Length: 445
Image (cartoon, rainbow, N blue to C red; front, side, top):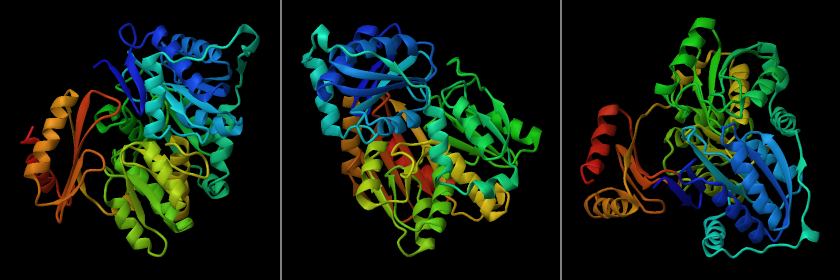
C-alpha cells in the first residue's frame, strides 16, 4: 500500500514505488489523454521534486505537450496559472501533507481543479494499459520556464479583499511554512497586506522542520512563537500550501475546522450566497449560514476538493472548502488556497476590530474527534457493511463511505483516497457525546 493510485492522484514512496519510470509513464498517460497541448507543471519543495518532475515532463513531451515549468510553487498557484496561461491541463508534483519520503502527482483540468472521477479513472486506465500516443521528433515541443506564479497568485488574492482596511491594522503575523512551497508567496502576500511577519521554517528545502500536517500536535512551535511575540494571529501552511491552520492571539490552536468557518463568517457578511463543503466538515458552517439568512445555505458533497469545486460552480457559491483547513475562494481559484484563507481571516479581523479569540468565542462550538486506522480496502469494505447493518437508527448517507446523523451528532467513516487508511470523524455538542458516537462505529471494526 505504499503506492496510492486513485481519482485524487498518485502518491508513493521515493526509492520504492514513486519512481522515474512511473512518473514518465503517468506523464505519457496524461499527455496522451489530452492529445498534446500546453501543460503547466509545478512542484512543492521535496528533495525528490526535481527527479519526479523531470521524468514527468519527459513523458509529457513524448506525448507532444508544450510544457511550462513553474518551479517550486503552491498547488493553488499552479491551478491559477493553468487558467492564466490558457493551458489544456496542469500537473502538481506533491504529496501534500505526507512526510518527505513520499511524493505524488496530481492532475488538473483546464478549469484548474482535479478531474472528475470518471475522467481520472480514464487517465489511470490509460496508464495501466500503456495506451500512449508518442509523437515524432518533428512534433516535440520545447520546455519553457515561468517564474511569475507567486506574483500572480498574490495579486489575484489581494484583488478580492479590502487591502486598505487590513493595512491600517498593521497586524503582526507568525507564519509557519514548514519548509514547503508556500513560504515565498505567503510572506509576499502578508507584506503586501501591511503585516509585520515573523516567519518560521521559511526556506523551501523540503526538509520539514516538524511533521508537516498542520495539526495541533505539530504546531506547538507556532503557538509558542505567537505568545512570545505577542502576535495577532499565527498561520500554518502544509507543504503545498493548499491548507491553513490558525492560532489565535493567545497562542491557542483553534482547530483546522475553524479556518473555513472564519472565512465563511466573513464571506456571508460581505457577499451573501451559498457555500459548499464536504460530508466530513463541521456543522459550524451550517449554523453560520442559518444565522446569516437570505441566500446563505450549505451544499454538502463527497470528500475531495474536486467534488466541492464542482458544487461551487454549479450553485454559484461565494466560498467553499473542507474542514481540514482548506478554503476555496472561487473568485481566485477553484482549489483549496492558504493564501486566500489568510487574506480573508485578516479582513475579518480588520472589519470586526476584535482580537481573534473574541471572534471565536462568538461562533458555534462543537467537539470533533478525528481518528484514522491502517486498513486495506477489503477490511474497510467489510467494516462499512457492518456499520450499514447495525447503525440504522440514524439518518444514513452513503454518498462517500457512510455518514450517520443523529439528533445529538454525526459520524462519518470512509476510506482515504490518498493514504492506506480509513478515517472516522465524529462531531457533537460535547466531547463525551462525540466519543460515544465514535465508539459505536469503531466497536464494529
